[in-house]
Image (tube, rainbow, N blue to C red):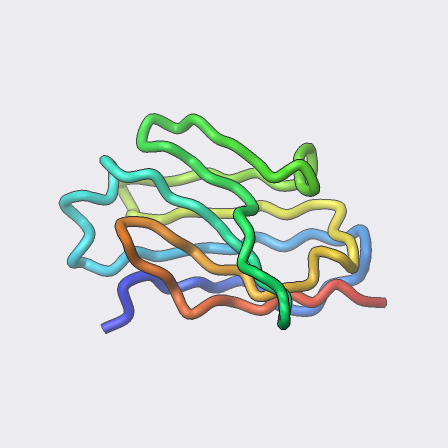
Length: 114
């Protein structure tokens, strides 16, 4: 059973938007709201990097490269984490991963290209 499942990736033109979603499996339901969650991304041949994080209390932090363009949010009732990505740039192209509770999803591919 997959513990974290990402969705929402795809092909988008520069300047466009995408909303990524991360669903936590039932095994995490009792602890989800008490744990920080994060979105990471990885380009082939490079290290995985933190894009955005959100604490259990809702405090957020962002990589400099995405500040002002990306917004992370969570819905504890639905056990979901989201990443709203606006004004996408070609350099945002990567596989995006959800992380939390010592678990990783399998990732969702985002391609920004004209």
